Image 1: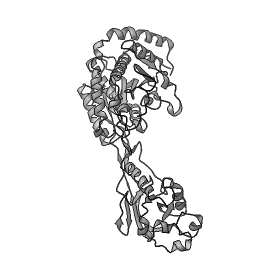
Image 2: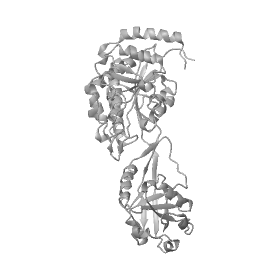
Image 3: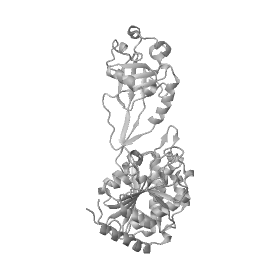
Image 4: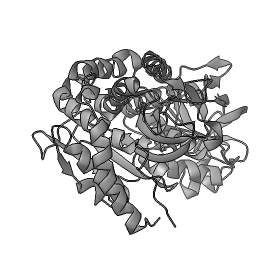
Length: 485
């Protein structure tokens, strides 16, 4: 997009004069460290369990945000609902079956499923011991239609041995560690946490029919299967001796429950004074990464801080209902941690809201101080692509207690390209001018230690006041109205 230079110069000269004359300091009074703190603590509470996309904790957060929008007097984005389902699918494991002689063994105590592909239909077949799956043994023992039992020396690196057995006809693989009985419990505990979490994505999961079906088992199970301990089995190396072992029948079943996900953006708007649909979008993602094996990731900075800011901005703008030239859309997005899914959905489905999106201000992690600053700063992202937005920012910064504007994250490339790593990218991709606000990375990022007590609420208040003032300027008639070609 190229902006006509003449139009741009006119805009830059007009906005400070017109907008500053209308701006009143009282607009900033509702923005306070106290209320920001209250909202961060509410969103990053233990009861929400890290607000994983589509989770019950996220649903509770969505209701909290909706109620805050209603209290501020905002209207539902489509004049019907504050919730925008973003069209995702979720899948989670159902109960696992590992039956020996009609007895279902104990999941995570006796066995654990290693594969990510489900066993959609029960497998019933004899289990055959094949040692360490050496070529000598596999050349003598047929595995077609059978379940292979393998001894390996690293349960974390199970794939190679399992794949070798599958290529030789095994329909499933059971594995035990040859000399470390504790390794089963280690991997079982880790997978137990993973299995209890739902996965979520923009399409139904698909798995190839010939995918590997692999289990790890407690070493003690070998006696129930073959009548011998692992120590005895490990000494069986000749195919002739192995063939004399029993071939117990197993029943294996690991189904997935796949369903449409209840994952929603929370979207409301403040009407402008005109009847047209031009709108400024103020966004922040409210989802986080949920529970991990090492605890609940509360996501206080990422991104309860940004969501609290959106709520605070909604209340601060509420007295200006019907007085600004542009509508202001306030959106708390879901699915950011899964790949900006909620922001992409909103930006790509204009038919669901019919607004003409003129600019986006995105807020993601504004509650902390990074290692290079003590106070009074903010990073901005994306405004290097949009000089008009950058000019508005600097005008706004002169209208409040000024912060040091930092551009370092505009320079990052590759995976560290922060333009692509938060919701503003969904709008930038559609040629909507964007500016992201960010306070920098820290050691608690995506860890249970990202807690509300570590937020600097006084600093956050100053940042939100700058964001409000920038948004106020962006909501003027002359902002983002230049000709493009």
